Image (cartoon, rainbow, N blue to C red; front, side):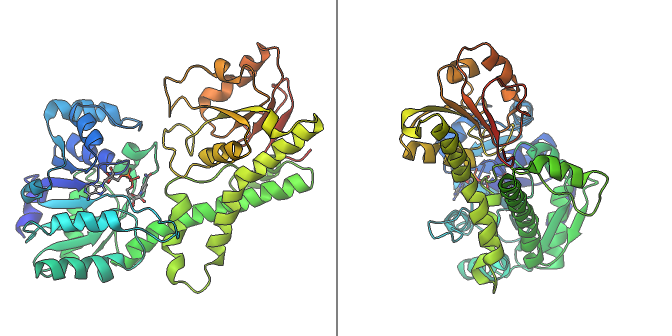
Length: 429
Ligand SMILES: NC(=O)c1ccc[n+]([C@@H]2O[C@H](COP(=O)([O-])OP(=O)(O)OC[C@H]3O[C@@H](n4cnc5c(N)ncnc54)[C@H](O)[C@@H]3O)[C@@H](O)[C@H]2O)c1
C-alpha cells in the first residue's frame, strides 16, 4: 500500500482540521517530530496567532514546541481548505459540544467533512479524533462520505476512529505516552492509523478494536471519572450533614487500601467531563445514573453559595450587601480553560444574587493585578479553582486588617492558617 509506505518513510502531509485545544498540540507535536503538518481552522484569530508563532492558549510545553516548529517551518495554519488537496492523512479535531437540549451538536464535524469531500480523497486516510457517540463513524460518517464521493471506505479511501483522551494541561506529555485505541473501518484503515501515531512515539501502545468500541472506550473513561467525582461530592454532602470531614474520612479509607481509590470532593466540570455522558444517554434504557451524576455535580456551586449565605446570616448580612472575591475561573488547576467551568457557574449564580463579584485567575487573565488587590476589601472569598498561586492567601490575609469569610471548595487549607472564618466544602461544623 503506497500510503502505508509513505507514512513509514515520513513522505506524507498531515492535515489537522480544527486547531483548538486538542488539534493544535496534536499538530504541533507531529510537526516537532518532523512531519509536515497543515492545521486548518475557521477562526482567523487562531490562525494569525499560530502563524506568528504564538500559542493562542496556555498548555504546558506548547509554546516551546511552537517556537521549534516556527523555526523548522513544519507547521502552518490556514483557513484555506483547498490545501486539503495536498494532504494525505486528515485528522478531524473539531469541537463536538452539546446543544441547548443537551444533545451532541455535530455541526462542526459535518462542516469539516463537507470541506474534505470537496477534494479528491482516493487513497487518503481520514481519522476522527473528536469525541462522538457510539456508532457515529460507521453509521453516519462513513455513509455520509461514501454518498458524497461515490467511493468506498476501506477500499478507495481509509477511515478510522481514534478518540482523543488527553487532559488539558497534560496534552503534550500524554500525546506521547498514552496508548491509542484505534477502530478502523477495516484492518488496513487501522494499520495506517497506527503507523501515523508511531510517528509520535514508535513505542506507543496501540489497541485495535471496532470503531464503536473505540468511541465507547473514550466515553467510558470520562463517564467513569465524572460519576466517581459526583459520588465523592455526595460523600462531601453526607459528611457535612453529619458534622464530619469528608476529606479526612476519604484519606483514611484510601490509605493502604487498594480496592478502589475514592476521589476527594471538589467542583467538577469542564468541556469534556460535563458533556461526555450525554453522548451515551440518547439511546440507553437507564440513563438516570449519568443524569444524576450531572445534577449532583452541577448543583455543587449552588450548595457552596448556600453555605456562604448561612454564614453571612450569622452576621446579619445577605449576599446583596456583600462583595465576594472568586479565586479561579478555570475548570481545574493550572490551566486557562473556562469552558463549562463550575467556577464560572459560581460567578454567574453570585451575579444573579446581585452581590458585587470580583474574580482573579492568573492563568485566565495573567494581567489582572494581584491577589492582594482583589481580596483587600471583600466580605468573602471563594476558592473555586485550586491553582497553586492561591497558596499565599493566608500570608496575604495576615497582612490585612479585614477578616473575610473564606470558602474553600478544594481544601487547599486546613483553616488554622487563616485568621478569619474558614468554611470548606465537604466539612461540617
Ligand atoms: N479539550 C480537551 O481537553 C479534550 C480532551 C479530549 C477530547 N476532546 C474532544 O476533542 C474535540 C475538540 O475539542 P477542543 O477542546 O479542541 O475544541 P476547540 O473548540 O478548542 O477546538 C475546535 C476548533 O475547531 C475549529 N473548527 C470548527 N469547525 C471547523 C471547520 N469546519 N474547519 C476547520 N476548523 C473548524 C474551531 O474554530 C476550533 O478552533 C471535541 O470533540 C472534544 O470533546 C477535548
